[in-house]
Length: 161
Image (cartoon, rainbow, N blue to C red; front, side, top):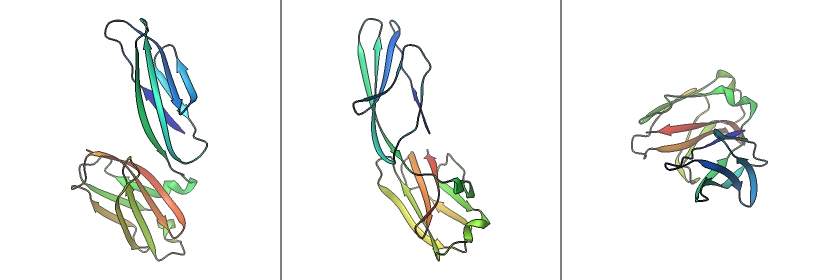
């Protein structure tokens, strides 16, 4: 489930209509604020959402958003990430149950909002606490993925400021 909040205002009037679309498919229309949509993507991958706001005089303004949806399992609670947001150094902590796997390593992947891998590392599956220095990475939202063999251990959204 993704919560999408649209901010729209008109300095010389009022907003009469806000529309949220995924391609040509209209996901929601709003005639009053708050403009909040709880959307469940039917699949994982990249989605190109657009919003259009129309004011009381008929003026229209549009904005686009690229959204990446990744699978999340019930076991995702076994992964802790802190501090989040961060200015550089993060700690990943894996629950002791996670070490009950068939792979000799964990793969740590960090992707930016364009889906580009900006960090990748493998660590021994016997390690439960991983420290990563991201001070050289630009401020941005990122997605952290931890896998063990072919199994996704968990994902987390990370904000670097």
